[in-house]
Structures are given as structure tokens and as C-alpha cells.
Length: 93
Image (cartoon, rainbow, N blue to C red):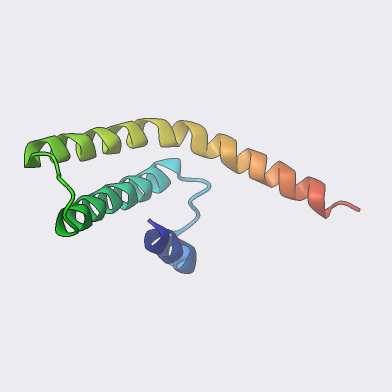
């Protein structure tokens, strides 16, 4: 997840303005979280932890992606407005 966040911040200009397109930001977040969960499950299995059956993992990843896709366009603009207000308050003397 940290690597995906780094890539989004590095290539922000080529991705466009995510503040105006919360659906695009949600799609990036869905891809990032889904890949992170998948890598976690794979590494967990390689390191010897017991992992659930394949379809359970797929169901969990799909459910996480669905909820992320539903809620991110709602709270992303709110968080963005709060960020703008906080940085505006800090920059005023």
C-alpha cells in the first residue's frame, strides 16, 4: 500500500487532478487496497500462516473493493475540503 501511495504521489501530474474526480481516486484506492490484501495473503501463506480457502479470499477482496468504491467518493471530497481549510489556517499569519 505504501508503494502504491508513493506511485500515485510521484505520478500525480500524469494522473490528472484527483480532487475534481473522486471516482478516479476511488478506483485507484480499490486497486491499491485489493493488491495490498492479495500480497498480504500470499506472503502470509509463504511465511507459514494458515490462509483461508481461495474463494473466501476472493470474496473478501471483492467485498473490500465494493465498500471502498461505494464510500470513497463520499468521504474523499470531505477530507479534501478539510485539508484545504487546515492548510489555509496554517498559512495565515
